[in-house]
Length: 373
Image 1 (cartoon, rainbow, N blue to C red):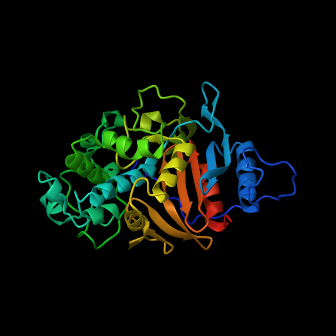
Image 2 (tube, one colour):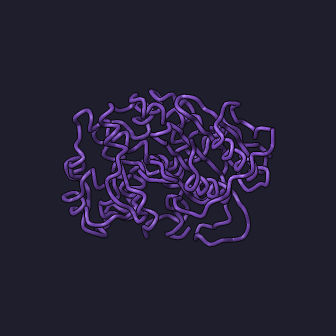
Image 3 (cartoon, helix red, strand yellow):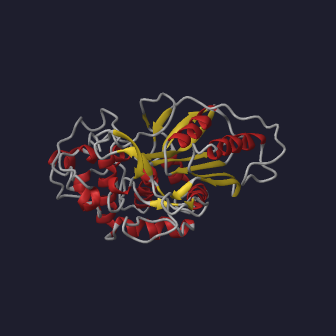
């Protein structure tokens, strides 16, 4: 796959008009007391799902209650297995939220500061400029000057060699900075691998074990983890894409597993369900994972992105959409399109997980232009 194969966060695309509410029948999965705005969104999802343009799961929660859940399309086309609300989806970059929380838990415990330099935790980091200059804050806000391991000339022709964080790290460990730390914003998967290694070095635990024990378990996320592609962790959705390893469009829809690393890590690639992600959001804003002030610091935007309505927070995006503040993250890859969004003012949470691309992008665009209230 080409160097551009990692999709950027899906924000600011053209919208989709809400469908008429004239029909008396509720779309599948809508609570009877759901608001008109949720119903309009559900009708949009249902239209795309019935047309075969959306394959995946959508969940809308308000406060602690899920007011809409629905699944469309097939998790496995060869076997005819449908997607359900229990299906695990590859998260792509949604894992960066877990990494941000993990790092801030260590900050909260006094084991780390956001101004700590990489070399203070990883003194054996091969590229000395990175060790001496880059801070945790810069890694969290994509201002470190590090690039993207998907651009590495060492990237194997197949990604099945990528398992633990050390396998990712070797792809860029010797690469010089692309810009002076703190002077430029560049979305960096490599930076979040370094953050994962920092978590491992401080705690003495693998990143996978740490986030399971300190995030997934306390949040009640029983179906979430960094599963290996050759593990049997059904039900899971297989991604489908027309892209090949070079990033070229073949015109033929195929399974995406040959394009995936063996196992995801601190930059992305774990698996979860829409329900588990809803639990994560509730645990986060309910201060079950971080204290109130640390939660505020984690979610507050700090560095402007190319989108004037969006800033980088610590593992999250803080943005304005349809006049509302939204905090969350997106995730995209060949055969994967995801979005997690929390609306602080209205307490809505919206999770979109898809094992294809087109319809999910339309739903993300819809939410960028239509208010949930």
